[in-house]
Amino acid sequence: MPVKTTENGEFKPLIVAFCCNWCSYAGADLAGTSRLSYPADVKIIRVPCSCRVNPLFILRAFQRGADGVIICGCHPGDCHYTTGNYYARRRMTLLFSMLDYLGIERKRTRVEWVSAAEGVRFSEVMNDFAKHITELGENKKLEDLRCKKSLD
Amino acid sequence: MQEIFGLIKEKAEKLFADGSVNRVLGWKKGETEYDRIPSVFESAEELEEFVYDGFCAANLSKYLIRESREDGKIAVLLKPCDSYSFNQLVKEHRIKRDNIYAIGIDCDGKLDIDKIKAAGVKAIQSIEENGSEVIVHTLYGDKKFNRQDVLLERCLCCKGKDHVSGDEFILAQNRVDTTVKDRFEDVRKLEAMTPDERFEFWRSELSKCIRCNACRNVCPACNCIKCVFDNEDSGVAAKANVDTFEENMFHIIRAFHVAGRCTDCGECSRVCPQHIPLHLLNRKFIKDIDELYGEFKAGADTETKGPLTDYRTGDAEPSLISDRGGSN
Image (tube, rainbow over all chains, first blue to last red; front, top):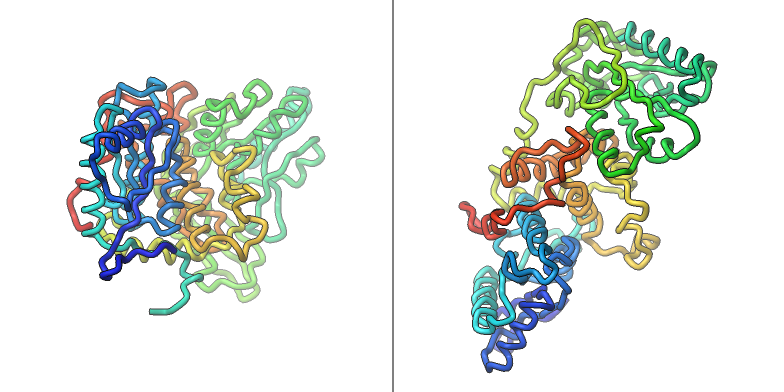
């Protein structure tokens, strides 16, 4: 499990961002070259399309201790593969609704559309999401009842 | 049901006699009075073991994936709810329709042995179905049940008694409607709970899983040649090393994989030895799909695109979920 506190004991969230290679990943690059800052708590994982994000990835991220997961893709209509993000949009809507149904806080997941030209937006989105997750605090531990170490 | 059983058997014998099929897919008696095994009959003589009663709940359509690839034509018996799964498999090109003679058969709801046993019935010797009555003969005497009280959960919210496909139908004169509740009733109950209550509910339910894979093996929609959960690298071979959330995740992902294709046949919950209400996961997806992308009944036909293999440019944004009211 990653260490999630700063030296002064403040909570430092772990955020996983799945970024589409053709837009948001380049957007993050632009944010960097434009000297715009975004929180270091955001760990970016490059994917070929937002549609590549398997629901399993999101659950695995939560299982391994992520406090928030954000998926960034091209704006609807601008997908590099024409329609990938439309499918991703349906999938993620259903998955988020299911996570809510399972009692996993729904505000810990988000989908944002960020293009390669939107470096400013990328930095804003990440700052906002990190702030939001920091306020929510640490995520519930997803584990089997049988594996629970202490009966608290 | 007895007259239907006679008619089906007669029909199967006739099909063998005129050589239009070389196999019949049906049910035969298992070890106990309430155990009915899906089985392939290869000749009229083998039909001696054939049975059709209130415990023939198994959905036979999944067996056609393998059987329809064999030589010759196979006749299959489909209850109304099985015909949805059958259509869905035809749509996905998983079964060869030309090699199948589908016989739609009547169903008046299937019985749940767990409900009968829960009433304290022991040492069952035989079970008699008599219209709206079920009489269980045991070593300690007979016990009568109202048929409606011992039906499977899925039959209480039956999708309808009409078949959506089939080459021929064998139906009863007086057809019984077993529907008494809305199938989304239980989903709505869960939705009304607080997120913490839901978290506790699902964690305790899903933590009962022993990973016997019965739900996966019985599900007509779960028909991948290689399952993502059979990946050697994920540690399936060494169960003790498996991650602590693995069983929970298996059910969430399985439900997601069949979303938009699940016909809500209820087999997963029926076969679960731990009695996990798995159908509640599938029904949540069905409910969401209906609400977000328009009403959709998987398997109602063989042409329409499934909701997850289709899109509209004006679909709802995922933020719709996080912007919903309520706590969290």
